[in-house]
Length: 104
Image 1: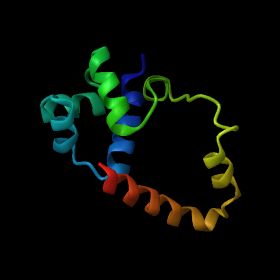
Image 2 (image 1 turned 180 degrees about the horizontal axis):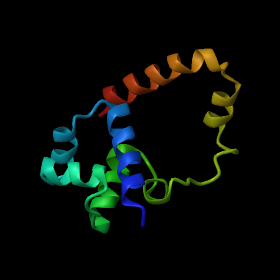
Image 3 (image 1 turned 90 degrees about the vertical axis):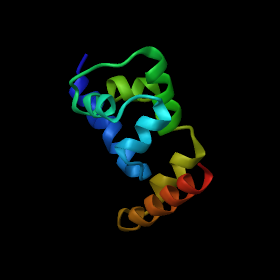
Image 4 (image 1 turned 30 degrees about the horizontal axis):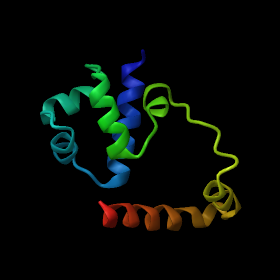
């Protein structure tokens, strides 16, 4: 298991969603130090912690562990995103981030 890559995926999504490491640790019911160790790849995690991370970060467990996700080509949202010009995707990212923060 490549825990360093796992940690990078977790950190990237945590930062994307605007959570501090402390806020994520609180949601996971772990210490900020343990959360840091996970993100740095120093430590692995239990299945319950992985499941909580998946739910909190909105990522599949497959993506967290292996960097792979299910085929999204049939999902209408992903089809719409594909049609968006590259220079406009940053705006969509901000809109989605604000929406996700608002519904938490």
